[in-house]
Length: 358
Image (cartoon, rainbow, N blue to C red; front, side, top):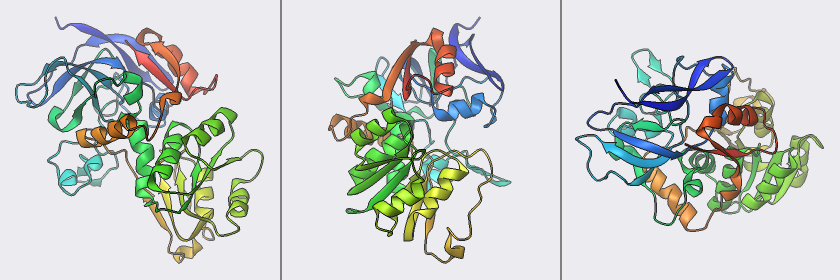
């Protein structure tokens, strides 16, 4: 009989529970890692609420930090006992999407067209990281060794939150001297704010309403903060920019309201960089889009993955360019995962990110 492990399992809409299931088997190009730290993502909450469909019985989670327990027979360049991270997105390295330079969309192509599921497999199409063990596919393309002297919590944001947030700034093609607005200062929005500063923006406007998040936004590089409950954020941003608008607006929540606001504050020819996961159809207002004639761009991004991306994220942390240590506000054992979901999904007690340790 296969050995068992504890795992957070999607049972049905509104229920993710801790239960037992067999430790994963691995193939010749895979690796089995023992999870030492993981976390809960806003996308996991979409799954919990039934807003994003996954199979019943699936282990949830896509942000793994761990130790290699076992390597497939064909894996080279890694060794058992090594501390590693894997991105939330696990490209194979050989697909059409990868060879076209868009590894995040690995696996998106089907005979019926393209679905923006891409290389997101953990906790989506295969068992994920909120467990004691995880099978990492295509290990040579996806496992990045953790630098010596770096803690699990220091790299915990790298697999998804940091990579996604920084990619919002990259996709927005921020230039030195740009003015940037970032809508929503949850973990991804905070990383987008940090990314805007890294890219050279000289005026960063952060929009949220929670005081702790607005304070953290300042720590991440925001020059001005706007409380959307105190004033209309579009009016505030247009006032702050003397009516010019922003060069880049980053949407990091995934709602019609924030998407539309981000579009309305763009200067002519500006870029809306969309990071949110939307659970319903979006409407583009005619006036905000200048009837399609405003030279504006809408760019979408799926978190970049793969070991090289993870190396780059670690280097940003190790260099001291960005300090994300303040994002972990709560800590739980895996046995407390249901309690952690309740806290995180309901955004209580000033939670930003939780660290889960088996």
